Image 1 (cartoon, rainbow, N blue to C red):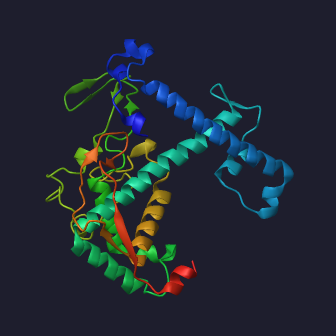
Image 2 (cartoon, helix red, strand yellow):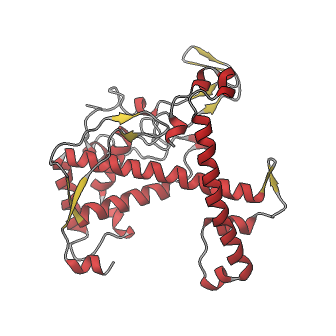
Image 3 (cartoon, rainbow, N blue to C red):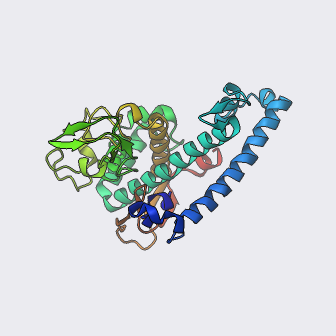
Length: 300
């Protein structure tokens, strides 16, 4: 993900691509080969289980099992064989969902550590609705409205893909007086849209309350263009529901189960680095102290 978002000389000067002056294309190919080898082992294991009936006996199926059940081994997809397509699809989902989700969790924790009042509010909400004798479960999430507002505000300030993924215009069009010919590569500056001072008061401030008051009707699913961290339209992120569920449940259990402070007791440095995804320039180092009774952790 880091290499995909880094500047490459060949992007600006395509005729020099064959030289690979910065060595990044070579590095990408090396990583791609390692990922393919990993996926091949995974694929062969699933095929063995499928042929032996072991998966059926255990009654457990993951996404790769589902893909194998719907494709024919001799089938081709735009010139790619079935195995290549299955591996590529699974890797795309893992890579797209891992870096973005962990990045958002890091930003959320950083923002809360730097804004202790918001941290106290969400911990109080968790204690009120969940209590201290169990962990947070999925059914609790609908009651945790301040936690949901924190996720929204985090994704507003630090969208996982600040420039979205590149799109291409299908036909000539005119937008805002500018002529855009067919085949133009287009980027949406989500980062700028979601920090627009004409839409949000104090847009650079971390204020989850805005999604409980002035912007309470704005959702994250591409229906409101002032908040589109998952993009919008036909190319909207297909994993929105799953990503939100994972982020809310993970953050809720972290905040509910532990007191969280920085290792040096200082404010978190919020500097970013450029890339395909929005990540902190420096790692987040924290100290976790349990705040629930020991049996809660032992039972889980």
